[in-house]
Amino acid sequence: MSLPALQNSGVLYRRIVSQFPQDISLAFAYGSGVFKQSGTTQGQMGKNMVDFVFAVDDPVTWHTMNLLQNRKHYSFLKYLGPKQISSIQNDHGAGIYYNTLVPSNGKIIKYGVISTDSLIDDLLHWKTMYVAGRLHKPRDANFPHPLPPHPPVVPSYKSSPTVLAWDFRMVIGEDKSKVSNIVKDNLAHFRILYSNILQECPQVVYKPQQGKLEVDKSPEGQFTQLMALPRTLQQRITRLVDPPGKNRDVEEILLQVAQDPDCATVVQQGQNGAQAGYRMSFKLQPPVPHPCLCDTSQITTFGS
Image 1: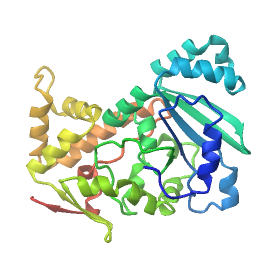
Image 2: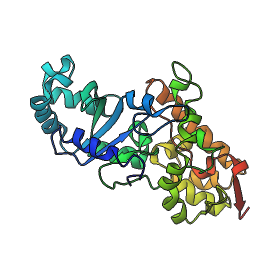
Image 3: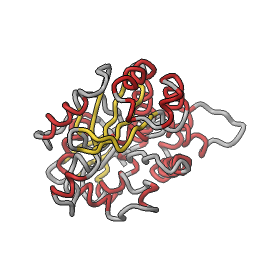
Image 4: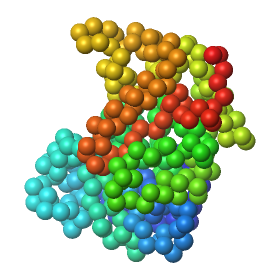
């Protein structure tokens, strides 16, 4: 879902995207060059780099055409050819290849190329959460696209900054107030982004006027939420809970966790543990909290 913000910029973004091979299944722009952050003037924002992600069905073919059209965008890797570039893209890191510091239409942009299959896998299973994490935040997309089926965030300012709070860049090299700056000026966009998901989730009663959720914390409700979590997080939870050598199936383990009064703590430990592994790459975004993980001061529970 493309947001109504920066509608005047849509023409510019389409013009930029038109300079690339058109076999793109999804293109979206994100970051401080697209959505204003608190404390940033329009003039400052205009100088920020604009970040794009292009999802393509066939990376080898796309890089082949892009090397013909935009060879100067690539580093020395252009000499290795499209097959090797695609191999590096698919087999390392988060499955995305970036060209950066590219001048285009009076802007400086960077763009990442990811296979459509890898993007869908990351959205559904949070394998790395690098690209999927960018679709959890406001962005300007060229056409509607899938969002993860997990209702992931409490749309109130006090808890929303947890979306980005574990980013490694918050520890080294970034403005410590960046999270708050992103949320303050874009809270309405976060609400638009998640409103339909929250309203359609049977385990959540969403009260947008109050900025609160009512989440079903009964064992049955928590089990349903646990079964809807991304596969990567489910696997991490099972490794935490299941003793070595027991080898119970995931459903049995999650049923046990759902009946634990400390269910949220167990899931949070799984989320933190998985993120610790991601942080080793120094570049991956954290998963967005599921309602059963969120700040309970912002949540009214029922069924307990």
